[in-house]
Length: 239
Image (cartoon, rainbow, N blue to C red; front, top):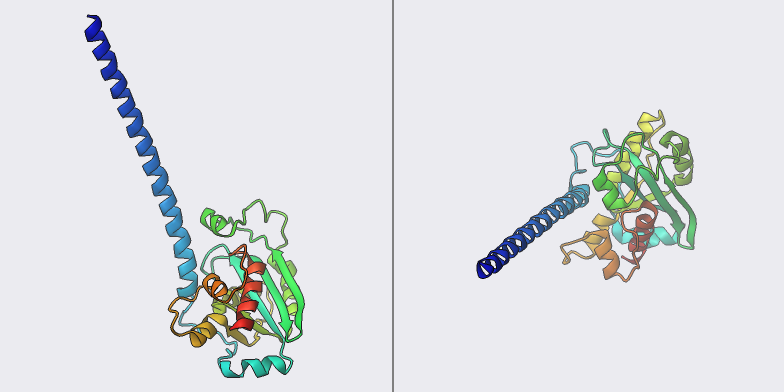
């Protein structure tokens, strides 16, 4: 009887151990699936920002594409504003800007900086928070877009906008200006994505972080507007 009881206890222990192991495996599988889904969402957002904005509606802003003249343009005193936004999503009509970052410069160096969080008055999706680290709590006390947009327009002045796939950001800027009853900013712009493709046709991949690494530019806090704008300005100057 003792021998049978001992064997029976061992069987129960093995059964419990197997059950616990299976439960842990199931939990790990669920966690992995959740992480994979989040990664897919973040990848979708970053890739879509590069591709989804090429809509049939063309920007009225003039685009500068004569890249061979850029150095002379810079030395002649032109003023540039590297510009980036963070948003609640990909649709300029439905989504809103949650952060604007910009750095203005000429051949002598930095002339000014502009950076602010913005309360979009709509919830920030969790996957956007995962990407940008901007939470709903962070923007509770932030200004509304209508309270800062004129200041940003004045900051831009007639400078040339610089950005990586900057059409995305300009479309959001125009949508916010329209909602606020303001005239659209019609600054000429230079897309550093196009500039990098022209300068390095052999690379094949042109994400801003990868370009910065290749050019030896220190890039921190990716997907925060001012940091991305600062890196973009340096990519522009070093390309």
